[in-house]
Image 1 (cartoon, rainbow, N blue to C red):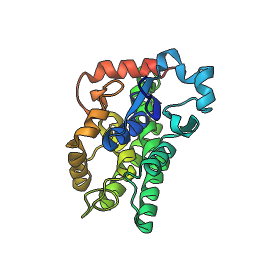
Image 2 (image 1 turned 120 degrees about the vertical axis):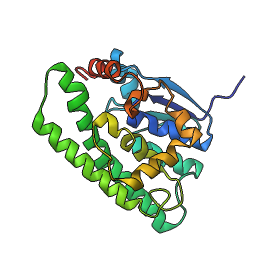
Image 3 (image 1 turned 180 degrees about the vertical axis):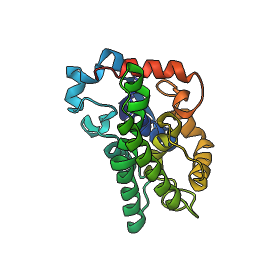
Image 4 (image 1 turned 90 degrees about the horizontal axis):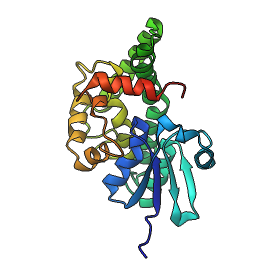
Length: 236
């Protein structure tokens, strides 16, 4: 009988949903995966809520640790980094810096760009255009990208030359600036960082799972993707 992988991942193709996939692909860790279908509200089902009481994705279950469940994408990355000793610096200061930039993504980049996306790509197609909200979240998202750009000056990755979970967490969000309709003009350090991670085969492979959505990154049929996202997030 074939042994099951230690890690079972429950996820979907969203910026948060891709984070653990990127880690697992980059770390070359064997895992299996269950796609959570938002259109069927599987994330709100009783069985899933037992794993993740917040009813969101992603969630992992570590079979090698008494089926221990971890939810919240940042917490998942930290758990995996410690379990596999990957993408987390050993140096005390660099380790703290990695956590700081991980929290920056969780508390800033994700929420602000998520709202910019919501009001323009989901609410507006349903007839709810809020100019105040759009301006507020687009401007704040741009400011946060400027912070990233400054941090990346003279660096290969967010915490120096080492690719860390801070980069893994931030990339799918910041790279989707197109979907949030946030300009990256003049942010040369940030754009060079995009280019470097764009060239990482494992990260790009991860973005194809569980279902590719190239439109989030400015490629493909944007109108169709926008309509599909407006529908799948309705009443969520």
